Length: 358
Image (cartoon, rainbow, N blue to C red; front, top):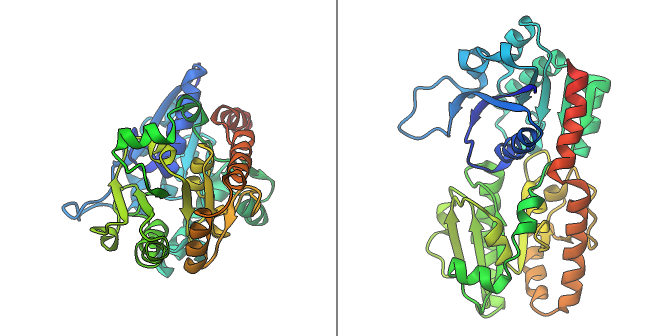
């Protein structure tokens, strides 16, 4: 039995979403295989307005909670470059570690201000040089990281909870009854924590540019769902937009939907929201940015759209076209996720890399 430690600047575990979803799924799979899993972190939860005096996350590696238990760890996985300071004592303790980069946050497209980008560039450089191996979830960023750090960079896809999805056999109609959603609407869903800049931007675009125009053109036939915490104020109080806040499981909301959208223009890594929707056989309308880092192909796995007006046209078209065409694209998307993103297969790849990192 081995001990696997995840080092994080902060965690919302056992809540799920984003990189925390990955830690949740990978931890679950490792425990099933008989491994002990420890999550070492500086802070639990997110900052609130009442918690202003904090060590910035960038310097969270100085906190002893991040490495006081490293001695018991057979394998160490550092999640993102934020706890970069912790990588120095980890190395001084004679431990190798894997740097798990969910995104290259120093890139301009990620959306951080310039001063944070420069700091993250430094953090990525320090943690990357000290790491035994580096994992990226994006095929696009894999080539960038290989240019910086060489052959120790490996690609491992995002893990998607297909096991939960396969157990979730509720029909669209039943899901709507459970969630008290109207049965006579065409429901279009956006998934994401909207406290994160790229998701907040997408939610604002939906509320102010896409949803009002679709509402007008469809004579009120379409209802938009914004599923996730911290929806922007522009989305509140609209008859054609429903916000949910944080939900324990996104599965029933996806199941209740006719389509999902991802008008995403910033960010890095791979957008889990797209794969999550595909895992429940829902057709996805997405920008190139939203499918970046994957091998998803337009009109085969998803419906492409770039400008907000493109999303308007695509959604209105979905009201008119043959359902067989929608179903074909949705099935291709599902097959892609099933073949590439099963959590158990992802953990097998991780274990192989862990064994090489010590």
